[in-house]
Image (tube, rainbow, N blue to C red; front, side, top):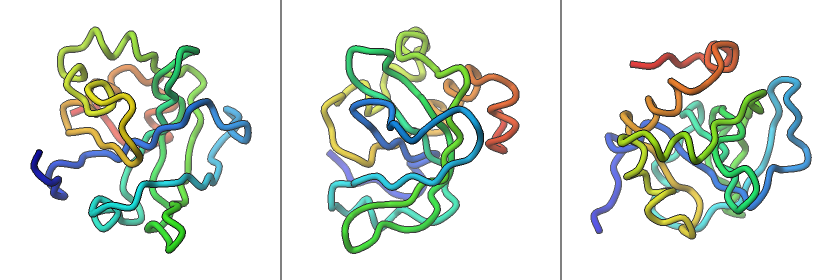
Length: 142
């Protein structure tokens, strides 16, 4: 398996076993998430786009969009500025899109944080966001 480069990463994807209790669809919120120590942490920079992916049997998929608020710290945690989605993007809807089926989060569901999306995979998510959520995030589909 080859190493990622900045050119591969259109968006970081941080997984959670469940929707964090502190997230409510009321606006931007700061959240800290644990990451596995790896070379990927060195590719992360403040301001990069990120998604919060909820895994598991209950409503898996994209629950929030946002940006990295900083770089991972010595404790391998990263601050995320997240906007919880009023209408989460369900895993089943993304699986129906051929661009997303090859995403690392699908191929290696038990993989560690952080994961990532390529630009075509991110486009599949963006196209399924409610207009208000996409506009607030500041990204548009290609």
